[in-house]
Image (cartoon, rainbow, N blue to C red; front, side, top):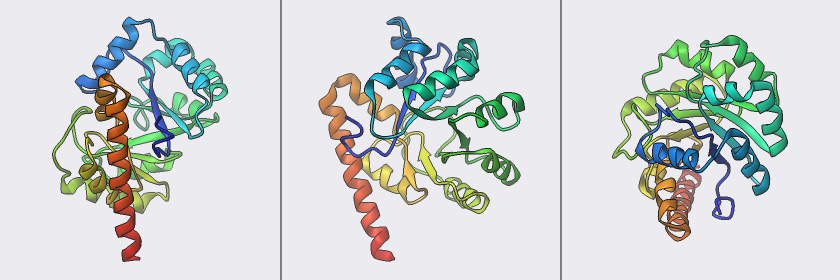
Length: 228
């Protein structure tokens, strides 16, 4: 569905019992998956079976992957068709050995930058990032928000000064208007909780949200192109 509706990549979460960076929607989805027997291997099997025509980014927490075995995970994720890995609890310098092990493998190590990240830290993060930079659009956990602060735009500018990697803006984007505003700050927009919430209601509501996001981003691109 996501590829059909125009998504450029898909994030697939590895369920974890203590998802501290996630809000209630993702927490509920994660716990529901665990209650129904989902595992790291099971999540990778789903990616393999889906055989999506667009890149798949696995996101989650370090503990389940280390318990599974980092080398084993990297090999099986690559075999399943995963392109990148985003770990919410592996900041730059936290564990250089693990970071280098991931960077030495075939999966792009996606890095997170928050609006409170200092300039030097942004530079360090950008140098170790691969694929794209995930710019967190607000403080706190995932979930809905009402507006973007000036700090997000300022952080985006600092990132652009430190790397040529694309910037994907995420956390709290729930509708087309917010997606359009986020698109003005970066090169891509990440929508998670809002889509998971709609999927709980069924494929119809999820497709409707995807359509709204697609049209809003097309409109934003048209304005950008017109400005030259």
